[in-house]
Image (cartoon, rainbow, N blue to C red; front, side, top):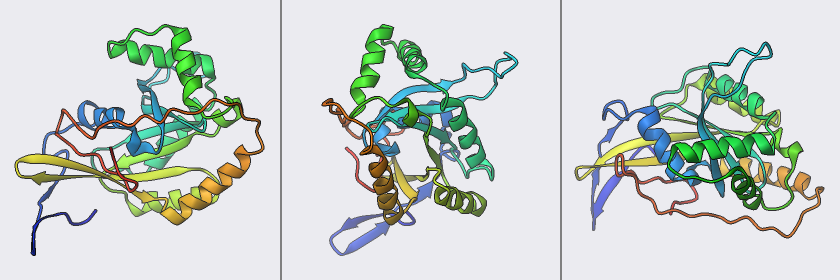
Length: 251
């Protein structure tokens, strides 16, 4: 979104744009919490499985230092790998996202359930491993597919994207690797901060084609009678009174 106005009849007054860094808002303490509280910015029916995940090890047994910002699960049964940048994304941010996608593509239901349990525990919610497992299963519309887990969707959220990233992501999409680019903007409105999330890639036409391609593959798999429970949350933010907005709408 390039321009935002307050309007009163025929009068339109442009709202000044600002940024997370300019307002002393941080990546983990603020932007990440907005996304966790409003996972609809990541797509339809996304359940946050975990955040700040770093419990993996290299093949030699040495713990890896990589820390995944947010990991979600959508209603189709695909994992959603989220990389966050409060400013302009680095030129290699898409490579970071691909690395995380490769790491989580080896996760199974047990690994995800344990990660979800640990995540909820850190946030003051006490669910046992069986309850977490059932929560993941109930979220998926249809049969749980280990094969589909191996093809995570990636979402990169940043204030802006250099051309190296957008060009690479378009090509990767053509190679059947799904990466969404979402731009986060910040404005000052009557003493409050307003945050907006706008998907800049894929375009609606590309997304419709991608959904059709994935739907064709999904129809080949047997499905049971379980339905996903889409969870809608009101659009609020305790950190900056931010209003989360996607192209489909929010709240």
